[in-house]
Length: 98
Image 1 (cartoon, rainbow, N blue to C red):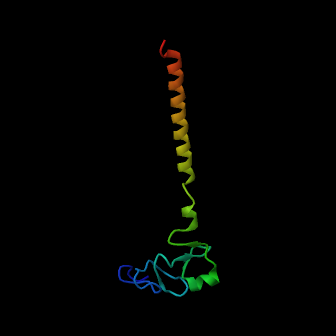
Image 2: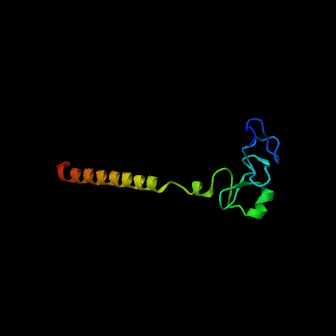
Image 3: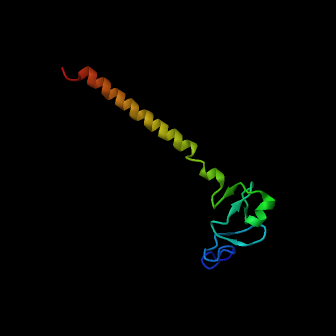
């Protein structure tokens, strides 16, 4: 790829090039980048032959939400907070005001 600070998108000359089409070597900005099933970057013209699955710089898998480990850790934290709340509630009921 040409130097991204000087290269311009072949479709949008006012935008900087972020990548090149792996098929025809066109310079592409972030609006023009398409990805194929195998993750190759292609332009719109070449995508008709390769059938893209995602638009933009990041693969589709990267946009599906939080990773599993983060979901598990957040669930554990929420359950821990609920347990603390229940324990304080029980202590208040047993040792609370008379």
